Each structure stands twice: as structure tokens, then as C-alpha cells.
Amino acid sequence: MLLSRKSGCKITTFPSIHKIFSIFFVFLHPDMAQFTDNELSILIPTYNCVCVELVRRLHQQAMATGIDFEIIVADDGSVDVSTIQANRAIATLPHCQFIERSENSGRAAIRNFLAQEASHAYLLYIDSDMTVVSDDFVSRYLACLPAQVVDGGVAIMADSDEQKQLLRYRYEKAEEPHHTATERQKTPYQHLHTANLLIARELMLQHPFDERLRHYGYEDVLLGKTLQRQRIPILHIDNPLGFCIFESNADFVAKTEEGLRTLYQFRSDLRGYSRLLTLVSGIHIPAILWLMRLWHRMFGAIERRNLCGSRPYLLVFKLYRLGYYLKLTR
Image: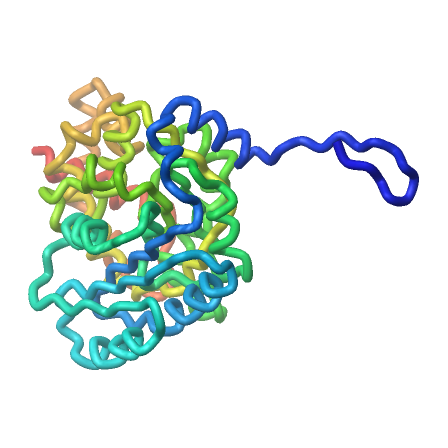
């Protein structure tokens, strides 16, 4: 109860949803109560991306909180020498490391490596192409502890009208309403993303990323599946990083194709965790699947030209993704 200075009235205050979640979590996992809430390792895997400004913003916020922290950036075998040289400036900041690795180990392995290198009880994974968009980003995560897993989400942002015409921006922006904290919490394990994720180090070491996934996509989805099997609760909050860097249409289409090949390769593991797999498994009439494959064989190249061009259509993108995947299942 709080006493109002103005009126002397008693005002009942309630704990935030984050604190309620934390209390519930400690009740379920009392072994985690031993960890202090003021230790944080911020882990940033990078590949051909300069992230010095991102680190500086995170460093400034972490210093302001007074916590024990470190920021570790690991370069996963970048081939762009200029980005490596630029990122070496990170090591000049207090509590910061920049680790150069000569070979690309893959998205899962580099994150496991960072967890092993970390020295604090909680890990905050951040993708190197993210942007800090709030002044209390770090402190809002600290307010959620000792929750074991907290996903802050992303905000889709563009700096110019030219960026807004890119396929990646248009796709992510169309999906954004489905990725609020409220929406993500409805199916928390299917919406786990490592672009902005806080997780207890002990948990991460017990259940590391699946290093079979060396190529683009789904390492975070499989982690979500593992956490669900272990009945580890996930808290989704609105504490986004900015998603502001969008590749060219051709690069995004190529990345999408790589992700679809990953999805096909690990389709057994990902069943129930991919909307595309759910859609395909729900088509029980072979003739429909045959017609879809025929459509892709006849028009897939035309669709791809549209997607790589200056005026891509989201409907064409959805058709192309479905057709490309079905082509893999022949």
C-alpha cells in the first residue's frame, strides 16, 4: 500500500506482470533463485557487419545501470576485411571483447561458443544488424529477472522511402502486427527469436543450439521446441530492438530459398513449429499438390523475377515460397 502525499488516501498498487512472472518462475525453478539479478553478458555474433555503434549504445546503457556486465562480439569468419578492422574498435571499450574466428561455424555454433565464453549468469543475445531504439532497453530486461527466458521482439523501421519499397521491409512490416508481445505470448515457443533474447546461461549450456543447423534459419525455432519439452516458461515483452537494415530483393530471395532448404532438411524436427509445414501437411489431396508444383515449374522463374525487381508483390512472395518448398518435396 502507498500513502498519497496529497490526500492521505491509501492507494493499492499491484506488481507488474514482469514481477508476477518472475515470482511464478522462482516458485517453479527454485534452483535459479541463487543467481544475482545484476550480472549480464551481452552476446553479439556478427558476420560481415559493422556493429560498433550498436555496442556503444548498449555499453552506455549497461554502465548507467551499475550492473556487472560484459559485451562479447564474435566475428564468425567474415570475409569482408574492412568490417573486421572496423569492429576492432569494440575492444577499446571497458568490459568489451571482440573475438575474431577464422572460419565460419554457422549460426547455431557461434551462439553456443558465445555462451561458453560468457562469465555472467544471464545472457542477452542480440543480432549485429539490430539498432537500439530506447534509452531503457537494458534496464527493462533487468526488471524481468530472474525469469529464465525473455524475448523482447523487434520493431520494423525504415529510414527512407527507398527502403520501404524493398521486399524484406514490406514482408516484415506486414507480419509486424502478429509479433507484439501479446500475440507472441499466445504461442510463446513458436515465436522465440534470437535477434533479441535474454536467457539464463546455465539453461543455455544445458540446452545449446542444435549445431546441425549451419545454414540460414530455424536454430531459434528448435531452441523453442526444446524449451517447451523441458517446460521452461518464456516471457514475451515489448522491449524491441530496431530492425533497420534490409538486404536487396535478390539477396532476400536467395536467403529465403536457403531457409526453405533448411526447413525441408529438418522438417521432421520442425513439424508443428512452422506455418508453412502446417499448411503443406494440411493438403491431403495429391492432385492439388501436383497442380501447385506444376504452377511453380511454369511460373516460378517469372515470380522470382518479380520478387528480385523494383516492384515485388507479397502475394507473389507467398506463392513462390510455397512452390519452392513443394519442389523440394518431390
